[in-house]
Length: 177
Image (cartoon, rainbow, N blue to C red):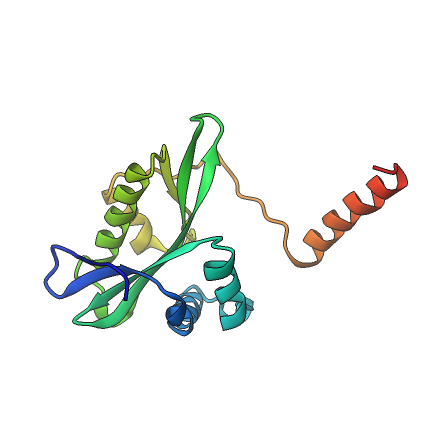
């Protein structure tokens, strides 16, 4: 097992996920998706996660354990700010099981990731939150996080992503690039 990070919360520790945690990570992802009313959008499998997290190392995961039971996780990766000229840390998912909420576990995960961002020389730490998630929004604002109201996120996925990629290939084949 990897390094265990004890926290100020009695019985709560953090550890870096290992390949054997893939089924646990997928279960956390599905629980979070269910909470967000988006379970039908989860197409990740254990095989896909193993490849992405441990073979290509596209993202990292921290597991939180309370009284030696996994109760929380955070999945994150690096991005880059051209304005700062530095990497950033982007939190894709943070989840605490309902029965473990109200103990400060989520805040501990967030502050750990903030310290990790500083340790790695990151200029910022970003994440997104669904507009209807009032309790999370209130929590983030209490921590000093500011919403980026002047930015709108965009995404290509599925057929739109396929079409954009095909357009590049078709256009550039015709030009013999």
